[in-house]
Amino acid sequence: MNNYNTFDSIIIPLIQETDTIRLGHNLARILKCGDCITLSGEIGSGKTFLARSIIRFLLKNDNLEVVSPTFTLVQIYEDRIPIAHFDFYRLSNPQDFFELGFDEILSENICIVEWPEAGKELIPYDRICIQFERESIGIKATISAKRWIIEHLIYETNRTYKKTYQRI
Image 1 (cartoon, rainbow, N blue to C red):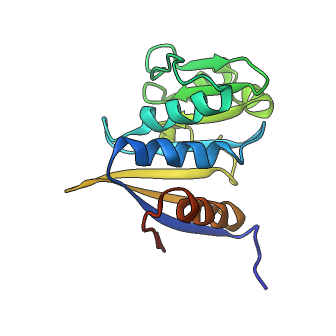
Image 2: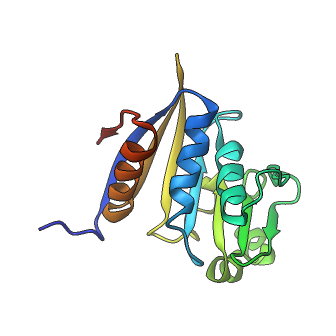
């Protein structure tokens, strides 16, 4: 018997920008208020690009300007589905997260967090974690989440673009 509330991981290669866009769309299809996605990886590895793909899909606006909230720390997109896009890169003091209202915002929005390491104690345990790593032919996205989410991504990956994936 599969326990869909246990955690699992998958690696999806992101060779072209369209691969990242499709991953964003596949993730967006299952998100609801209170969900949190964390995006980790070096500068320029695709964190903001994936966030943009998710946000544009959810808000049904392919031309929406979505930039990294590096200096604003959070960008709220209010629509039928409220989305909060955070960047924790410049945060280090626990008080910073409180002043930002992260816990309140988290309960009422879909949250996407770039550079989550600084606030890892505050981020929900059942988040979707995505780690980006550069490889010779693109980016490797390692996704850790509840098993049902991984199963969904495997299904959508096979259905939408026949990419290979590696379960770990």
